[in-house]
Length: 228
Image 1 (cartoon, one colour):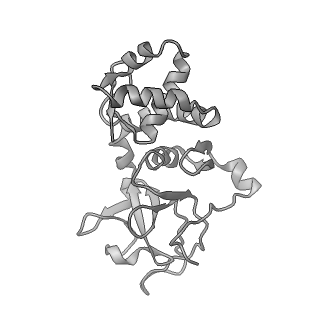
Image 2: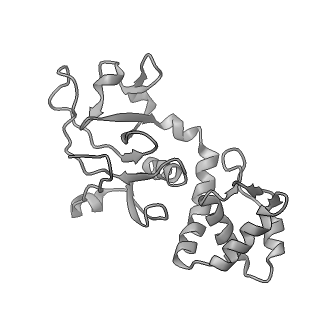
Image 3: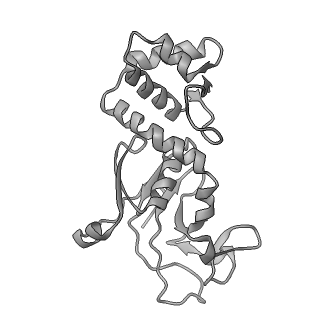
């Protein structure tokens, strides 16, 4: 099986679906609904959904479960990665885990405590498997919270596009200085406040407007500027 292009999600049986803590959301990037199992995977999904360096990804990638690892691997060990991700280079798999179950190798990469401690002994079907500790998510709590807040506006924009307002808001900022969120809403009072918010969120998502999503919670004082 080749993973150079794309990959589909693992199917969930009815029993798995009923038992899972399932999050269903619309991916503007993939233009389809995604089904994410567990809050940690949902929070990680928010980060990659908004990451412009990610060209493609898939939740619950549909692969064979046997690890392709060194001969020291126990045959009973299997992998069901949480994500397949494609950026600039070769695609890779991601597995989320408690930091207590992981150790850091010589080069800083996280590896499972049951492993041999070398970066080369964790591969899935010939691709790198990156383990992500839960501490990574806790370190990005503000960014995750902002994306949780904004993703609903992006989803609504996709359902009801407002291209004219989208272009107007972008031109308003691109042709002048940076503006606060409140300034933009006040400047477009001839349109509903909710519509303006969906457009602002979509412009941030598309990478046309820059906002600090990592250190400050989104508010009326959030500064927006041209990102191009």
